Image (cartoon, rainbow, N blue to C red; front, side, top):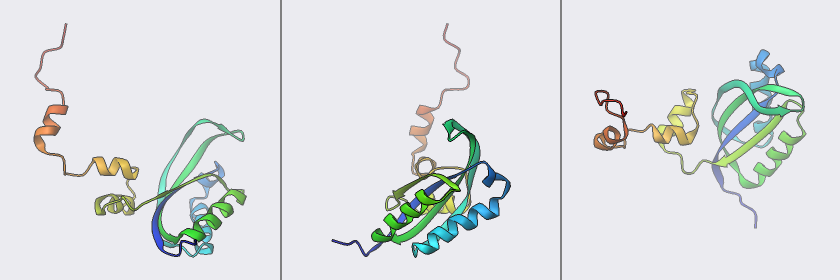
Length: 144
C-alpha cells in the first residue's frame, strides 16, 4: 500500500569539507534534491561545521545542513536514493517530524544550533520547582 499523505520530516545532511567553503552551493544542492522529490521545504539552515567523530572517506570535517520538509512517503525513498548517489552528500538521516511542536519548529526556522530533541527540552513547560531541584545550589558548601 502506497503512502500518499504528506508528512513532516527532519533531514540532516552531512556534506563534505568543500561544502564549507561554498555554503550557497551546498544549500542549492540540498534544495535541488528536495525539489526533485516534490518536497515542500519548511526550513533549511546551516546547522554546524565540525570535526567528525571518525574519518569518512578520508574526511575529518563536515558541514551539517538541517532541514524540515513535507513530502509523501513514496517520494522519501526517492530522495534517500538521490542523496546516496550524490557525490557532495556524505551521509543523510531522515526522521519523522510529527512529534515536533511549534517551539521546536520555530527554533529550527530561526537557525538555532539545536536538534529538535534539545529544543523540546528548552521549552518553558518545566515547572520552576523542578528546574530548581535539578540545579545545584550556588551557596552550598563543597563536599569534603
